[in-house]
Image (cartoon, rainbow, N blue to C red; front, side, top):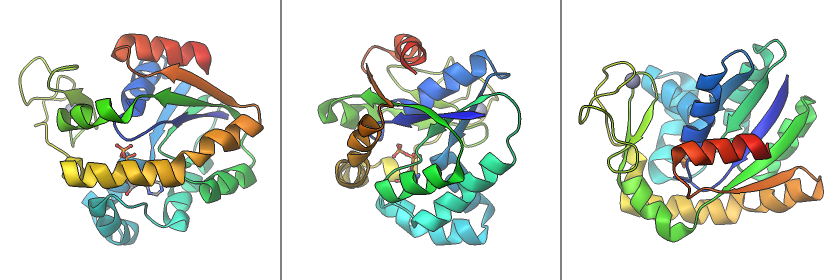
Length: 211
Ligand code: ADP
Ligand code: ZN
């Protein structure tokens, strides 16, 4: 196994890109989203979920050890010759160092570049399926039937942390905590960059070519 890290602001389209690449070739790729793992734990009410909930609602990062343990578990139970598309982890330098210590080779870290001005609109239109985690956008990526998931028929919802105030906080956290990872991976010669404003299909194609 090796790892490709998706770097980018909240709403930059990392999840949509990773979903598309993994759905197109499930034998070669596995999409792991830290946000989905955490939301799953919150929904189930596990001890980690109970601890994570408050941080997530405020748009803050959950403690490094909490998310690192979840990612370590997923890596431990993943076998075979595949590329893990790691979306949302690492999110700060401390987490990147934890990942390095796990010893799984990082093939590249691809920055999905989207200006902040575009992010707010994107997140405002975002809808998600709580059942299968599929993501939609009311304008850019609408479901066939309004409010209903194409893939599983689930009822689409707006994420709790997608309100404009929390989005502002999440962007600030991104610039302060996560953006230093661009330099971190650049120094290792692993950084790639794509324009994340090309629409879902072309974003995914550009990502695949860059990774
Ligand atoms: P987005 O990329 O749109 O911000 P995510 O689903 O990746 O959304 O994350 C949602 C929330 O989950 C974050 O705001 C944060 O509270 C928490 N979270 C996700 N990944 C991490 C991480 N690696 N470290 C700390 N907190 C995380
Ligand atoms: Zn669904």
